[in-house]
Image 1 (cartoon, rainbow, N blue to C red):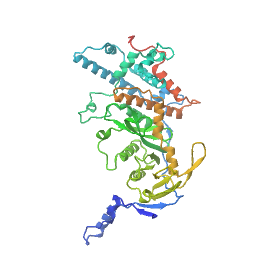
Image 2: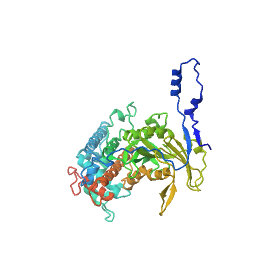
Image 3: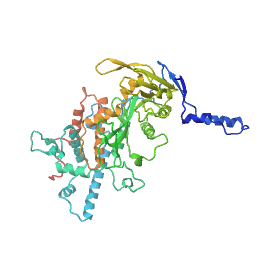
Length: 489
């Protein structure tokens, strides 16, 4: 195996082509032809230790920012994402949708049900919406098999009188039935319209994303990965990811998160090939990372991004480095640009083989005998060599810095999923977007709690359970009389 290798991919194949021009062309045109030709990638076998030039981290005021006073209550943090404007919009669109449904029933000559007639006498406002959301959040704290069990008072050993003291069961189900957060009559909601937007019902996501960027600045290490809002409803947005632990079917989300806490800086929904349109010539995974990094405002600040082998490529690493972002991740062996000395490498156990090209380091690493193939990884911000990595049960084990840091910082999205699912008030809905709506509420609560932990003066800080209990009590205005115009439903 040679210590130097020229990348023989498509990019360098034109370098050795002879010019088709005549001999009497002037020297200036020859120089222009040479300048237009791509520079070959020269990979050099290196032997540790050897440093890799890393970018300086220049982001300021890392952590929570623009936050409320440290003594603020839990509901104040949730209001940073679930703003009064968002609540008023939901109330307005819910009323509009209910009127549309009722008028449609009347125009067809059908009689209105007793429950529908009671909706017309219901004073649905922001206060009642808060109570509804408070009960939904409380369902994540008090799990029961069926919705009606929350209002069951016949069995004192399992009764939860809190729910019936806030809203009656029929009122709760009516609000759930007509709940809406977008206008169904707009062009973006019409499937046959050229302006159709498959995400027109996901406006709550805009509030989450804007709040995350406004109130938090991440530390240097960030990660990008996909997650699922678990469901099997009939929609073009449904995707299947077999290696996900929490859900394997659902609406796919791409998120860029802070590695240690899982705080999402920006999240976007994958609309499928039909909804997304054709990818660029760099591929879908390249486009996802590039879009998330740009829209999150992370360029030219020395951030270090960790991704898995779905995203990692030499092209992406070089592209991000030019934008002031370092990349570390695992790589698939069939990715273009990997030098042959790494593809064909057969390292011994606990051996690592390195190749370097300017700012990019690629390695082949075999950790244990049971590992059938060596692991290929790439980094533009970590050196070669070995470091002591802590293992379970105490003690340490030597690993390359790339492997050690990847294991430490890659799990941001998985951490977020774990936090969301722990107290998620999951309920089955015929409408897929309602499942997404409440999943986004759960994410808002997680983000609120992370901000609370970073900003509060409480010593010790509230646990997440007590934090959520505080939110429920504030939303439901506990011990207050139900606002239903005295209508028993």
